[in-house]
Image (tube, rainbow, N blue to C red; front, side, top):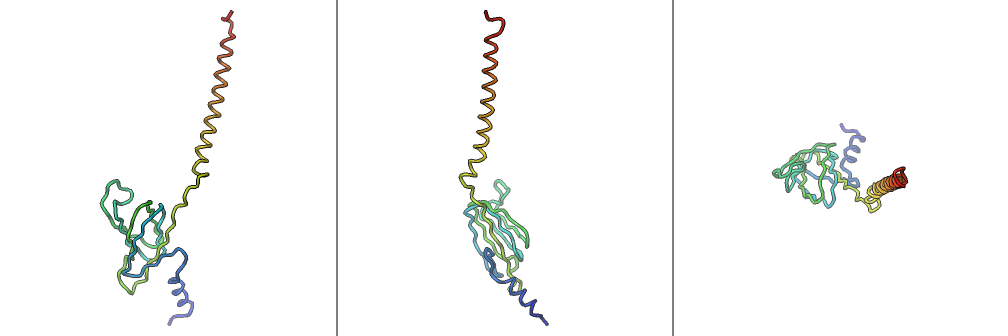
Amino acid sequence: MRTQPDALSSLALRAPAPGLHALAAGQARRWCASRSGELRVARGSLWITFDGPQPGTEAGPQGDLFLHAGERLAVPAGASVVIEPASRCPSANDAAFTWQAQRPVGLGEAVRGPASDLSHALGDAAHALSRLMAGVWSAGRGPWRA
């Protein structure tokens, strides 16, 4: 006999949540990543097929990956994958995943590091120039000059 909290827990597990993409057994979804990001399996197991070479291989064959709840997969920008539950049994629980796209780098963030590097380099160059000028100045006034 099921108790009411168990029934509510089951309903809560199936309730749509923001950012959660659920797939029923036998259902497939094509995912085209416009930006690099991370796919995380929230529940169940997923069968993921890349259209092109596997990530991490230079010219590898097309391939399939199987991921289980809690596992993550980095997907590069421009990649296209087909995602479906690993179980095709209709009585099995559905699978679900979340997608977290990488945050685009803003102009301020993109130039802050190089600007800091340039600032340090210019400071080092100014210091080197002042030491050079001091050396030239002292060499021009040495005892060998009449």
